[in-house]
Image (cartoon, rainbow, N blue to C red):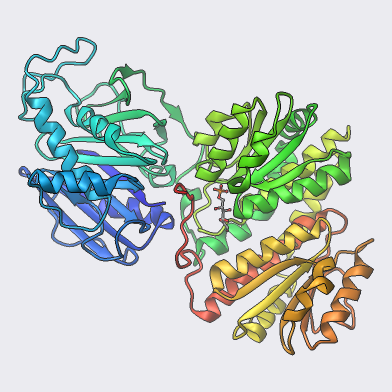
Length: 624
Ligand code: F6R
């Protein structure tokens, strides 16, 4: 939540560059945004509420800049509460991602010491603490830190008396120690041109723009919350870890331990994601683009994914209890996994929301295994769950999409989904990738690693055909028919049940309609009371053993006047509308969701909501 983008390098139109970076991070929060650049010893700031519309006019060219998109936590959505925040000296700019839990007492202390705070935010507190720490460091004339690189005699550490390089990073480190909660802070100091950041709980990635990150004079370095914003500049990245502080200057990047201040080696990784993958291309929205990427993704997993899935299967087959966890869409994938592993390989498991995992973790023992599902690898509830499981000796696995993310570093086995950047706030292709790997792993666990390769291919063909075989028109007709309804339901059975939950989540997230997914069997235990004449009810009806059950269910809601939409291979008289899904067997599981993802997209267009930036949501939920 919240997006950070920073630049230090040769003077340029840094404001426009940061704006472009923030656009790529906007899915992390779009309540307000702001950019600060440094020029001639002063900070120049532009801030606004709402989505990023046009690059700010009137900011000077600069070799240092810092920007932020906000998902509001403390303080209303106003321009005054937009980041970056300044200190009293006017030489610092600071942005923040997280929640400073002790900000009230810190604020009182600052006010008592004569600081003027201009916003209601917890974040501004950190800017003034930074000002104090810099002054305090400059007064430490006798400081002896032979382990730290000394500042150049040309005043490379700014005009303070602190004799070592990375002065701002050291001050930020000291600020970080005063804060309670999970926070990432980034700041720039116009006096020295240094950009610095400290991380504890929210993602931060450094982009090495040129040279090896430790030399050269014409360098440019970047800082962002997500690699998608860096790919236009560099694919050489340093993933800042919790408990680390980083200092960026045009001539190099330095990393330090946030507790001791000791220098740390830089671990530069080359990422495979291309800038094009993160671009919209010919599509109107990322949601649309990412839905249509699913056939290619499935084919790639069918071609290349068997080894990784077999490794996952070995992990899933460990003795002891098996628990699957995640949040939101990722939880729906975990729940699907529970059905698939039981169905295909007779392996029992339990699926639990990550934010409800605490009591489960407390019951784990060495030999038990936990597999976490997460697109971002940064969801705090998921990290909490795996950390709790680790404390009780469980083995940890994860299915993750974002390379280098925190989750990948905390588990014993990571399966990378390889779905490329997912920029729409709504998860689509990464859900499908998780299901595809679960299918392959379930086959491998049953002793047939290639069992579901044809399943993935069949699903890919069916989804790809949606574009041209007339089904898109049916989806649009259904969308027109129900666009003004406020309530709708999606029913599924067995492995179709998590699918129903996921379809309903997609629709509610992006249309703000009240869409609920239910297990078809629950209908008569209460849900049917919600059905009125005209209520849209989608019934996930694959061919096979569940078909008759689902048709009975469809008949029961139809008898109460529901508008029944069947999703499956066969047309039945009980349907008011039928969206055909031709893929059979477990391929249905992969092929049935995309038409409903498209329905969510079409409904968003009809209802005038923003498909990529639904209200109140942010991708990557890094606060509790
Ligand atoms: C729904 C959605 C969310 C995420 C959830 C977990 O479209 O995107 O429900 O699935 O916040 O996020 P990750 O997968 O990053 O852990």
